[in-house]
Amino acid sequence: MLPILILFAICQSKLVQFNRNNLCQCSQFVYENDCNFNDYCAWTDFKCIDNKCQGLQQRVCLDTSENNNYLFCAWNNNQCSEFRGCEYYKYKDKLLCQQVNAQCTYYDGDDQCSIKQCQKEEKQSCPIIAAEGICFVYDGQCQKIEKCEDIGKADLVQCLTLAGYCLYQAGQCKTLTSCSQFIQPEDCSYYNSNLKNFRHTINLCYWNYKNGQCEQITDGILSLSLTPETCLTDSFHTYHWSTNNNQKGECISCAYGYLLGIILYIIV
Image 1 (cartoon, rainbow, N blue to C red):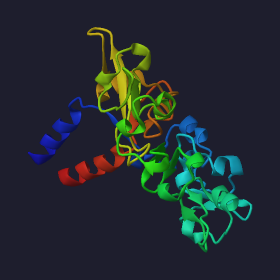
Image 2 (cartoon, one colour):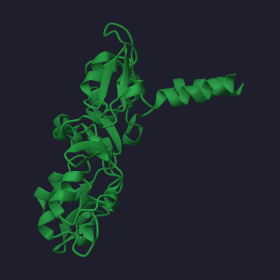
Image 3 (tube, one colour):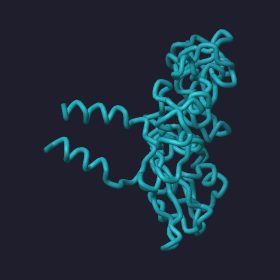
């Protein structure tokens, strides 16, 4: 009975969250175009393999775009290698540390690179992503913000910098907690209200023209709306196409394989 209940629960329509902790791994790509889209993957012998940072050019190695390579790779000794944490690199120079990885910097008095920390950064360095979360300028200092309201009522520029996390509305910077806060179709896109977990859990929204409201997308709508060409990119690299055929298949979560393995284990 338990397997039936589990399968029934999975089949129900549910709200979609793109969890950046569930980024697709190269080995999960069965659609060749998905594999080739990622510079850190390679399509070989009809399967996708992980380059593991080796051989990547500096531009790709330090890429800070949505595929989040910068979490895994480092540029050191003029080559790309797997990132071992900022403290591993024994540079005493801010520029060299920042070239190693986007998370790293150097602070006077240290013996090695360090991960960026809000309270140690100069005002002009903000906004930045640091160990504590997102750092912003308020009260004249670079500090971690707990909520968008901390930015200030009239600070439009800083509020707009955190689009997707904060919403400037009625003269105030507000923390986004729901798709329904978007009142115009052109603004209805996505939000992430967790400022401590930057870029990790993304809630996708869509405009429901029947009721004139912005709503959070469900997995049923998602599977129908994403194509082989948009499945990976529009899901922030957390979904992939299920076959190596752009005429067949569906857009599935990269966390799905792990979940399915658990289900099959219970059934057996």
